[in-house]
Image (cartoon, rainbow, N blue to C red):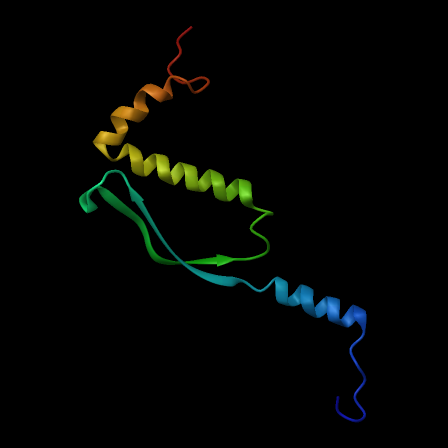
Length: 100
C-alpha cells in the first residue's frame, strides 16, 4: 500500500462490487437447431449475435426459457417433418382446438 493512502472501507468495497456487477457482460451467441441427421436439416436461428447480459441469469430464467421455447417452436413449425409431429400435440394445450 502506498504511504498516505487509506485502505478502502467495507462499504466502499461493496459499492464498487455492485457497480461492477451492473455492467453488461457481452455474450456472442450462435443458436443452431438440428432437426435430423444430415447437415441440411439443421437451421441456424442466430449466428454470432451480440446478446448483452445484465444482472443474474437466475433472476430472468423464466423469461429466457420462455423465449427459447418460443424460438424452438417457431423454427420447428417451419420444418415440414417437425410440423407434422407437433400439430397433433397442439390439441393437448388448454384452449387450443377445442370447440364447445
